[in-house]
Image (cartoon, rainbow over all chains, first blue to last red; front, side):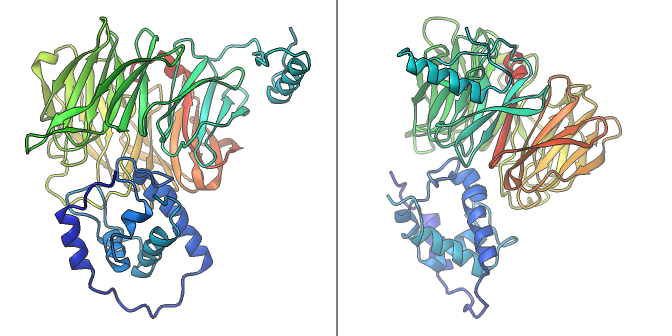
Length: 113
Length: 402
C-alpha cells in the first residue's frame, strides 16, 4: 500500500544525498535521545500517527524509510517536502539529531511491514 | 439492587464478582446519577479514557481497550450517557459513562480522524482517512447505515479518494465535511432513506479542519495550502462556497507548521470570530457579518486551539510544538493577552465546563490535567493522567457541531 515515491521526492533525495557535515560532534546524550523519541512518536505522530501508521501524513513503515539513504532521510526531515504539509525541522533539530531520527526510523522502527 | 457509592470502580468490581459468582451475565450496574457534569479525557499512550466528574473534579473511572487513540476525538449520545470514541486505528467505540463499559466497538476503517452525531441522535458518522470517506452507523447498535466514499476527479481526470476532515453535524439531519486532497466540501442529507450528497468543488487548497457555528448556519473550513478559509452558508447552499480572509498573511512568508491547527466549534465573541492563523504566531479576528479581517493578535506561538469561554469574555489559546508549554488567555474586549499560564509540558487541549467557571487543560508530557478557575486564573487542582490529550464534557451532546 506504499504510494510510489514521486518525482519530487526522488529529486529531493538526490539533492540531499550529498553527505551531511561529517559527524565530529559528541554523541547525543541519553536524555536528548529520549526527547527525540518522544518527538518522533508524539509530535511527528500528530500527522504520521503515534504508531507511524499514518494520518494526514503518510505512514512511515521500515520499508518506506529504507527506500532512502540515511543522509537523504535526515535531509528530508530537516528541509521538509516542498508542496506538502511536511515542514522542515531544521529550526528545532541539528543534523546529528535528524540523523538519529533517520537511523531510528530505518532500524528501530516498530512498523515493520 | 445494590447501591453504588460515588467511588465507582471498586464497588463495580465487587458487583461484577457477585454477578459472576451467581452465574449471571456480568452486566455492570450504573449508579443512579445524571451525566451533565461528566466528561472524558483521552489518554493516548495507554489507549484509555478517564471518565471525569467536573463537580467533584476527579477521575471516576478508567476505560481501557479502545485501541490507538493517538489522535482520538469523542462525541456524545443525545442522552449524554454514551461517549463515541473515534480512534486513529479506525476503531469506533461506544462507552457507557456510568458503568465504564464499552457497549459496542467496531473497526470501521484503517485510519480515522473524528466523527459527529446526527441532529436526531440516531446516527453517528465517522470521517476516515483510509480509505477516504464517511461511514454512518446506527448510534445504538453501531450497525452500518451508509458508506460514502470521498471520491473526486484529479487533474488527470482520474477518480481518487480523499482524506476526510472537519466532519460536523448540521440541522436537518445533515452532515458536512471537507476533502483534504480534493479541496471540496460535501454535504450529506440523511433525512430521507438514502444519503443525498451535494458537492462543492474548488473551495481552496487543502482544507485541514472545519467548524460549524452554534446555530448551524455557517460551515467554515480552514485551508492549509493557502491563506484563507472556505465558508458555506447552509441557509443558502445554492450560493456555493465563499472564500473568506483570503490574504490574512498579507504575503508574508509562513513559519514551518509543526502541527496542524484545529477548528472546533465556533469561537465567536460578540460579532467577531476568533481563528488560529496557519504558520503565524497570531490569532485572527474576523467580523462575522462581512468576514473582513478585524485584527491579528500576536501570541506566544502558532495557535492550535482557539477556544472561547462560554460567556465569551475570554479566549484561551494553546500552541504548536515547540511552544506548547503555555496557554494564553486573551480578553475579548481589549483583545490583549491578559495571562500566560504554564500547566505543564505539551499542552494539547482545553475544555470549559458548561458555564465556564473552570477550564481543564491537558499537559501530555507532564502526565496531568490541570483544572483552572477561569475567574482568578489560578490552578484549582490537577489530576494524574498518562499522556492526556482531548478533553470532552457531556454538554457537547446538546450543541450543534460539537
